[in-house]
Length: 225
Image (cartoon, rainbow, N blue to C red):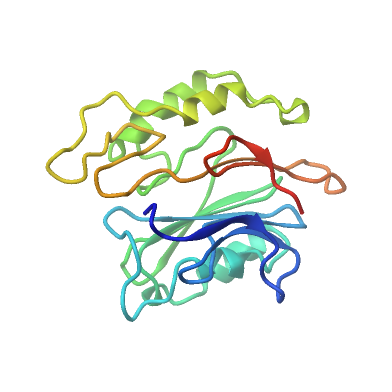
């Protein structure tokens, strides 16, 4: 929701100085972060679970818990051992230069952990690469597959920037939230919208820094720190 306050990525957690992440000012957690070891953690709601729920812990703490680890494998093992009943349903993506994992809490009391296959994948509020349930994936995953592959070493993300700006072509669901279901750049009649976007590349050489371009509404800029 565009009314939920947040800060652009930075080092905000004294107990985790190795973490750079956006900060949710309502619950104190994050939706996406990167640590100095080259691990990225990103959290998404599952469909129909927007916002907090009384009696449940904030899902924004999960990326921070994951980023306390050095790599995706150890982070996935730690997160999968948590009590899923403490959180509303979520999709969590953990990735480093060598491995990536999708962890899903579907509200059934347990965590699903699945390795992300090599190549291009897409994750929304539905299952990984589930083009049957997600119109956004059905329309946009083929577009990403057909697009020119970015070259982060040259700062060339042009094709993906254009895809991320896609505002949709399918008719909006006016009966509910007036959202075009195939849009990457989301807007609605209830304040639910895309408020930021990131492009992140993790180098295979651990001695090199990751590249993170962040757009909080004023164009893509490098994340400092």
